[in-house]
Image (tube, rainbow, N blue to C red; front, side):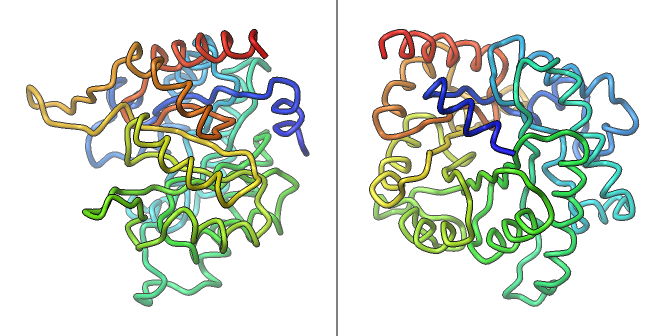
Length: 297
């Protein structure tokens, strides 16, 4: 299935949705609760998120399945419900957008470290295989393997997705700025190193999400562009969070974000959306700017 590539070929630039965790928290998800369980217990509440993002202009909408692997679900004794939770996640998003957007099946990192011996490659491959298959069964149009920091784990997830689905694969990594001014993942990898290793696994798209606000992402995308010919993806935070009035505050407003979009496109981004702290209002502004840029092409 190449619906994502076909859409990008037509529109040249695509708008992804924004944060899911932020939206779920705004709807009452409490610290320590399992976001993915809401797919089974409160599907109508979850459905409000893809509805809102689609209405705001997102052309790509994610699923409530970021932590839908065995390792994360086992914290809630839900590891036997991997397939059901992920399939339902895709079904909810697909129903929510009403064919007005493509569905990206969200696959996040396991939360365990391979090199520490917390698990085996075989076990990790198995859980990602189940998750990817379930998302495809639920109607996902592509898979978004996101917020990774470890190349080895990302490659296992990509292989599992390629072996067990017919979907296109996006792989995005999270970077932090070092004291030297470079951007590296928590495991110490640069965008250049990621391009050299991860593209061999056969992905269709590469990029970055979370960890940085929109302006910082332009530097990361520029480095990706120097090493990769793949379409580049950015899902940025609404800035770096701080605590204010006993809550989490993200400083980048929708209006500010709209002023940065041209920089991301100039750096090489083809798909732009949001991560932590972003809302339908942010996505609406991104779509407004992207529509203007398309009209000038």
